[in-house]
Each structure stands twice: as C-alpha cells, then as structure tokens.
Amino acid sequence: MFVVRLLKQFMMLPHADWSGDFMLIFDAHLDLAWNALQWNRNLLDSVYTIRTTEVGMSGAGRAQNTVALPEMKRGRIAISIVTLLARSTGHRADHIDYPTPVQAYAIAQGQLAYYRALEQEGHIRIITDAESLKNHIQEWEAWEANGEDDSQTPLLGFIISMEGADPILNPQQLESWWDAGLRLLGPTHYGPGRYAGGTGTQSGLTEIGIPLLKEMSRTGMLLDLTHFSDEAFWQAIDHYQGMVLASHNNCRALVPHQRQFSDEQLKLIIERDGVIGAAFDIWMLQPGFLRGKSNKDVTIETVVEHIDYVCQLAGNSNHAAIGSDLDGGFGREQSPYDLDTIVDLQKIPALLEKRGYSDDDIKSIMYRNWQNFLIRAWS
Image 1 (spheres, rainbow, N blue to C red):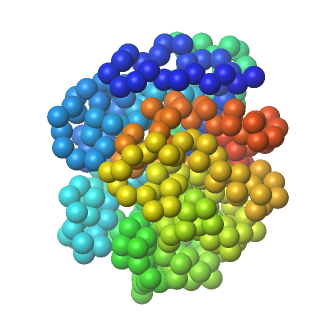
Image 2: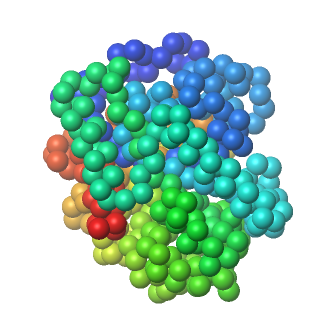
C-alpha cells in the first residue's frame, strides 16, 4: 500500500528517507534550462537551498521553487521531457520574449548547451531514440527491483523539446535542430508566435507555419499541440502526418478557458494514439483563478480529476499521464496546496488507487504511457 508522507515545510531540511513504495515517474514538461539560465538557479542544489538564496527577491515564484535535480532523483522522476524556451512574438518580456528571432535562437542554443553540459558532467543522460529509452527505463526498473539504493540512483533521463518554435529561424533549419538532439516541438506558446497563434489568441497558422509542419513530418519531429489556439490546432492536424501529443494540457470541461483542450480536441489526440499530460499550474486547475490569491482550494486531487477525465473519455488508462510544468514561471504559490516539491508527485498513485485504478493502470499513467508513446514514434 502506498504511504503518503508529507514533506517538511520551507526552511526545514529535506527528508533523507523518501524511498520505498515509490513509483517511477515520467514527467513530460519541465522548463529546467529556462530556470537555470534565465532565472539563474543552480539546479544541482536542492530546492531548499535555492529557496534560501532567493529570500528577499521580488517576482512571482521566487523562494517558492519546487524543482531541482536532487528532488527529481528523490522523487524517482526517472525521465523528463525538458524544454528550450525563448519567444519572439513582438511583445517583449524580460528573460522570455526577445525583440528578434536571432536573439531567441541564441537563447535556445544556450539552453541546449546547458543540457549538454549537465550530460558531460555526468548528471543526466540525453535520450534521442527508442533503444536508449528502453535501456534507460530498464536500468531504473532494475534499480527499483533491487531495493533502491539511493547512493546508486541511476542518471536522470532528459528528452529535449522546444516550447514555441520562434528560435527556429526558418523551417529549413529544423533538420539541424534534430541533429542537435531536439525531438519534440510545440510550434507556439503564449501570444502570436512566428509559426502559429498560441494561448490567448484566435490566430491560426502563419505563412511559415505550414512549411514547418511539413518539415516536422519529414524529419519525424513529434508535434506537441499544447498552447495552440483552437484555430491553429485544427489547421495543424490537417498539415501534420505524424504522431501528436499534449505534453501539459488539462480539460476544458473542468476548467472552461482556451488554455485547456475541449473534449473534441482530446478525443482527436486519443484517436491518433497520443497522450495528454496533466499540468499542475493552478490557473489550469481552478476556474476563475486570480494570480496572487490563495491556492488552498486546489490540491493534487484536483490534478487527478483531470487525469481521470481523460481516462473516462478514452475508456481506458492508455492516454493519460503527467506533464507537471512545475516551476514554469511560478512556484508553490501557484501549485496545488499540498505540493511542496516535485517529490510530491508520488502522492498521485494513492489517489488513483482510491478511485479504483489497478496497479497496471497507475504505472501506465505514471510513466509507461509516455514511454510506450515515444517507442512507437521512434520505432
């Protein structure tokens, strides 16, 4: 029986006994390089150390972070899809939206270099093909079966995605990004992206959006539909022939605004054998949420409601998963109230079990659905 343990609160030392009864996790959306470089966080330090260094800093999320590599290991986040994130929409915003695509390109290249440096220093493993993915998961499963010695935890696995294609200077450049290790691409983010309308717009694909999708189909770059406007979503489906996913998307039926996907959109992803990752941003979990207000009414159980909704819509557990988006421009103040760090994703199995999900169903949701999806796509 999974035992839920509460994390100590901010400014207390992290647990040393988070082990046993834990399940491997595949998190499909973490903005790690953006946090490390644009937010200037040393992700090799613990969450608690980073919080201490940010005490007194202004801005949402400061001293409220939830993700760092030590907590990812402690929480058995065996594999993650990690992002490159830089926009050039014409609406400048510090540390994320730049005046020119050339600047966005340089920022994304720097973020890619960060992941490569982590790999060179022996902290993580970058995964780019089905065989490497299978071997990586097998290594974690073997470690789990042999008693989970924390002194010999396997490397964290990273798969590189790009959230918003603005750094890709033109569609013809996509192949060079593939050669550099990029494997998933969401063409837009917030606002009017260079390739497609994103969250908060009613714009469709741009003139260069269709050639990008065709080049994605040719190279095998997977299409992440997250953040598409409704108009761009349906246009993209007509022009992209490969497998699709929603790395971090919740259900519009439960939270009725444009950032979520409608039942019709979710069914399309399910019909195309895709997977939908449930996100933890309260804005996506509580109807009418206002930034800066209390998060006490939203818990990890609220996230599980979205997971369950996708399963009921599909009629099985094969298309629901996790795409937490933790530290995606926010921290504990805009995360579920009972989440202290990413380790608390381990509360999900017990919540699913209470709803009648079998052990196999729970393992599918926690990591196997993303694993199987990528093996199908890359085989």
